[in-house]
Image 1: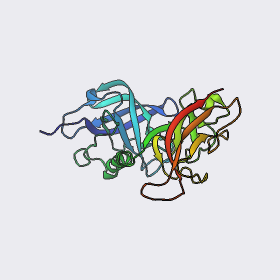
Image 2: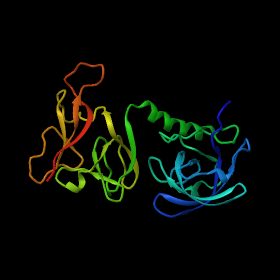
Image 3: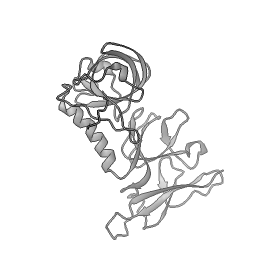
Image 4: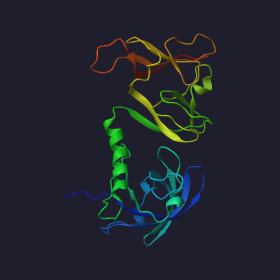
Length: 270
């Protein structure tokens, strides 16, 4: 017998912005099988909304997470959504009346169980977008974390970032102990105040192409914000952090060891 997972059509009716990425939303829900109602919604359920008609992010599909459930009646629900995607934050109020879906994420990886576009009358591309997100993280051999740029400037690709006390990230540096609590290596450019992915463990292909290291070389956090170096810091006030080692690409015998194998280790602190 097939297992039935919670999923349904989700249409926002209005939205009130609470913080930069949190919104109180009144919405209607529809399950083509008649199995689920708003009473089945749980905190951490995921919502995908069609941003095709939005003015700030046209042609996009956006992912949110349920963080509070206020009330429900019949097939209507009032809840708080937190934007949980890459790029510019989209207020659900911009897509009032557009059909998206709500579903339960998997326990281990947080992937959505996909709603049926035919059953729930949802555009096919909304479903495909959610599948692409999951496939990207399943097929890529890296371990990602979605983080927010807490600075006023873009953070470039292959930059080392550290946690801020408010949960955002900034460029890490060995010269400032408060900015040496590493969050990972950026996999893409993260605009100021927006979200993007960092790689926390495993391999980061081509991350060391500007350093031109030999295979097996040790890679350290630099005193230059966001940068890596092949020579560890020497000042008594610096934090010496080994980020990992340089390796050539898999299946290729070459002295060009541009791939970073993350092996995080704190060697000395001021």
